[in-house]
Structures are given as C-alpha cells and as structure tokens.
Amino acid sequence: MIVYSNMRFLVVDDFSDFRSSVKGMLGQMAAQQIDVAANGEEALNLCRKTRYDVILHDYNLGEGKNGQQVLEELHHEKLISPHCIFVMVTAESSQAMVMAALEFEPDAYLTKPFNRASLQQRLDKLVERKRLLAPVLDALAREDQAAVVNACNALLQRDPRLAPLCQRYKANALAVLQRHDELEQLLQGILSQRPLPWALMKLADHLLQRGQLDQAEALYEQSIEQFPMLPAAFDGLARVKLARGETLKAQVFLEQAVKISPNNPQRQAELGRVARTNEDPERAVRAYRQAVTLGRHSAFRNPEHHLSLADSLKVQAGDTAPNPRVQLEIRQTLEDLTRSWKDDQGLGARADLLQADVLRRSGKQADAEQLLRNAGDKLANLETFFSADTALAVAEQLRELGRGEQADQLLGTCAEMYGDDPAVMAGIAAQTSNPSILHGGEEAAARNREGMRNYQQQQYPAALEAFRDALARQPRNISYALNTAQSLLRLLLSAPDDALLTECRACLAQVRSLPTSDPRHARYRKLLEKVDSL
Image 1: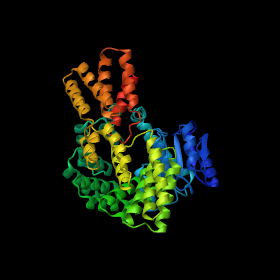
Image 2: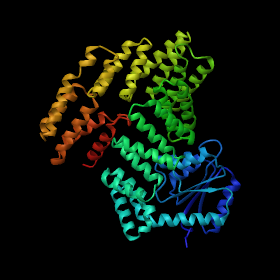
Image 3: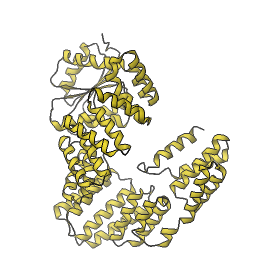
Image 4: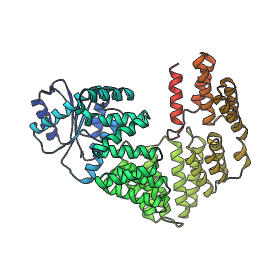
C-alpha cells in the first residue's frame, strides 16, 4: 500500500474551488503536506523553495504561463527532480494542447472531472513505477550517466520485465556518454521486437548526427508511416533535407510538423528561418509571429525571434516602405524586445539599426539618423561581443545604412576574435578589401599553427610559447586564449605553479563573455572546471 502521509504535494489550478477539492481528495489519501498555487509563477516560486514529490498541475491557467510552459521551465531551471511525479490536469483536449504537452513528457494526464478513487489509482501506479526505478533516478539526479547505465543493467538482470521502464533511460545515458555502438545495438534490439516511437526517433536522430543521412531518412519515414502524428519525425526529415541543401523540401516537412503540433516556439522559429532561406517572407512572418507569441511566457523566449519577425516584416515589404500597419507591428515588436532585454546593448543596437532602416525607407531621415547615432553609441559600449554570424550581419547592415567606417571597425574586431576560422574570414572578405582587417592576423595565425603542431608532438613548453605569442599579437582571439589556457593547464597538471595558474585563469577570464552559442563554449567550460578543481 502506498503511503502518502510523508510526501509533499503541490496543486496548481486557477480555480480555488478545484484546488480545495483536490486538496480534500489528497487529505482522504492521508496526505498531510499539500501546497497550492493559483498560477504558473506561484508554482515556480514554490518549486524554487521546496522539492515536491507530486505536482498536480492544471494545463489552462488563464493569463500567464500554462501547464506546458511551467513544465518547460521546471526542466530548464532544473527545479524538478527525476523522482518527482508531474501530472498534467486538463479539461482541454485539443490536438494542439495535447501534442505540445506530450513533447515535454509529463508523467501522466488526468482529465477533469475526476474523483478520489481515480486520482489514487493513477498516483498509486506512478509512485510504484518511480519506486522500481529509484536506483536509476538517483543516478540521474546526480547527472552520473555511467551510473544510470549500470543501474539499468542491474535492474534488467534482476527482473527483465522492467525492460520497458529502463531501456529509454539507458539509451539516453549511452547517447550522452557517446557510446555509439552500444546505443545502436540497444536500439536495434528494441526495434526488432517492437517499433516504439521513442526508439525509432532516438536511432534516427543518432544516425543523422553521425552523418548517415539515408539510414536516418528511412527511419523517419518509417516512423511517419507507423505514427503519423509524431511531429519529431517531420522535424527529423526536415533536418535531413537541410543537411542535403534541399531547403524547399525541409520547409514542407516543418510545415507538416507545425500543423500537428503548433504550440512549440522553437519549431515555429525554425520554420521561419528556413522560410527566410527560401525567400518566402510571408511564411516566415507567420512563423516568427507565432514564435514570439508562444514564447511570451516560455523558458524558450528568445530575442532573436523578435528581431527575425521585425526583419521579415521589413523584407516582406520589398524595396518600398512598409505600410503603416506593418510599421506599427515592427515598432511594437522591437519595443517589446528592448523593454524585455533592456540591459543588452548589442540587442538594443540591432533593434535601432533595423528601425532606422524602416524609417529611412519611409522618408524619415532625421529620425533614422538619430537611431543610427544611438546604435553607434551602443556598439561602442558592448560588454559582450557578437557571435561571428551576428557580427557579419550587423556589419552588412551598417554598410547598407551608410556607416562603412563603423562596419569596418566591427569587422576588425570580428577578425581578431574569430579570424582563425576560414569561414569567418571568407565572410569578412565578402564585405571589405581592407588589408589591415584581412591580413592583420596572419602572423598570429602562423604562431598558433606552430603551437598546435608542438602540442600534438607533446612539446608542451614550446607550444605554450607559440600560443602566448599568438595571443599577445591578437589579445581578443578566443581560440588563442583557449589554446594558451590548455597548454598552461597541461603543465600545471604535472607540476603545480602559482604563476602559471594565475596566467591560466587570466586567459579564461579573457573569454568569459564567449556566447554560449559558440561551439567553443563547451571547451571553455571544461577548461574552467579543470582549473577550478586544481
């Protein structure tokens, strides 16, 4: 018999009568620790203070966050333990709601109305399932993926009937550990017995990630044939098409995914991005508009969606000025952006440039000039520089607005920070012929290559000197700073030295504002963790 008296419950519903009713039912089940919340923000605040064993959360809470968005944020902020049971309670059964919530995987659904007996029956099963999986969930809570695999193996050996409960946890852990052969063997074995949707998706995603496009495509198609309401399969097919450069086909599959499950802001934004690539601004506007609206109360709210919506609206107007209604939407979208991310000078500058372009097209030159001056001031005071792609886009925008000198300054910084990447330099070369920008980093790049050769040959002191020299020539270069830090760390591991440790920390501090979107950010985090552990 399940004992509920020592469990902590949270009941979230905007109707006080319903909260009281559920609290009464839980009381009849001997539950004693029951908190209630009337909206998503209250629920999140309670979860920041208390670890709950069971959360019963209504989907539709009126204004503010809905149940799906609260669940997203609980996962995003890691406010929910793997042991916690999250039950989505709803009187709504629209496809959009069900598909959106399914993608974030609550432990169960409970449809209103329900009584004490049906609530207890459902909770009994869920509590028993979590109890059986306790060793796996303990390892998951510690984020120890190797222990998750071991715990799954132990449970499977003890009782093969637990396979349906363990296999997915094991597959996820193997994927994180990059034990590719074991993962494929496990998934192939599962699929040979039964075509489970999650296993099909996991194997297809894995093959896609490994560049096996044909095999991944076949599995996505098989998934759609057997489970036609699986939006992730259409997403996967879109990614395959994008990898092959077939952007029009990718858009078709994304539109099908959005049709099945439209309440995912990230999917809408991806559709907008692909539609822009396909020069389809009308579809891009609709998708980005949905991404902005859906993201309003979501953990996935993203300022890039606002900028992309405003820019798509501008592009939709062609070479002429947008009509007054569109201008109003652009202005409101950018005001929402700058209000929501008011401390981000880079976003503010990009919003100013976009609005200046709209005003210039509308013949409002004086207002456009003022915004350009505002953007220039913000660009001069950036605390965190742009990613390479954004820097190139902003430089191009500045040049189109007659600010060639500012564009070159931005490109110069971009070359110094990212110039060791040939693709970035090609992008810079497409915008400027300025030799100091295009060739200013060649000596530093040569020294960096020398350092890499020495490092590969395990000549660590010589590698360090070369990396130091490269960094001295281009102090803002991220790769040179990371290479120097890694060389210093390599020496520190064999012989502790306070001076080298200080220098290593200084190199990492130099790149602390590296955007999380930069592929080198993971390397930076790993180096930082190692240095902190010394």
